[in-house]
Length: 290
Image: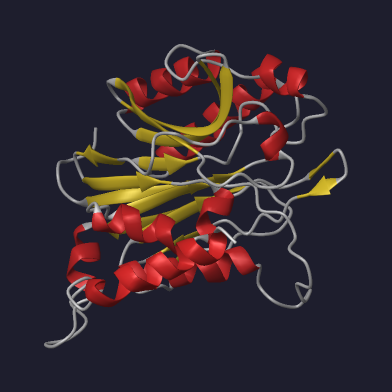
């Protein structure tokens, strides 16, 4: 069992879920998370929709592969592991709730399910299957710090990082299924890595982004999972583009708050010009409604 304090072993599990292979996906996620725990991880992040796979052919298929976020088979397996090893997991989940399905992430600890995040910004065909997230950006108090969550395309919106950070998050856990973006030069790092590094730097938060690999029904995924510190630089990764692997970093989450004081005169949050932003937001809302 980990000692109390803000220093933890932080891990990202990069794996290849298979569409429809729920039992196999659960078993692999538990095995790789167990290996991460053997290597010293206290907090482990798993990819987006790692219980079900991602590329659904129909709404019926997506619904058939969904589960309850409190009692489904994947959640029960992750909760059993968290209890047995005294650790915390953030895992992407195809969630069924109140007649809808959500692209979600569940936060699980030694005492069971702590909470759920539902993806706010849906990417492409996800709009055919999932309801938009309706829980906002919750931040969870854990023994070692405050944890925020978002999923994949949420990371294209600076508001995702900032809302979690303003609520006091020290670390953002990001289950993801990154796909190639248009006009991406093959010799450059994936755009998602750049966005994550920028979000960490602009908000002085740790970020652990766990991606998947493989090609599913013709859709390639990018891998390149990474763990980033509050200065914006990688602490582990980026991982490979095509191999299952575990990234691990030892981090002190208290460093996030310290990093927000940039120097004697500048603080990342204290320097915010909310008197100006209100006018800007009103103009943006007006432009979006045209």
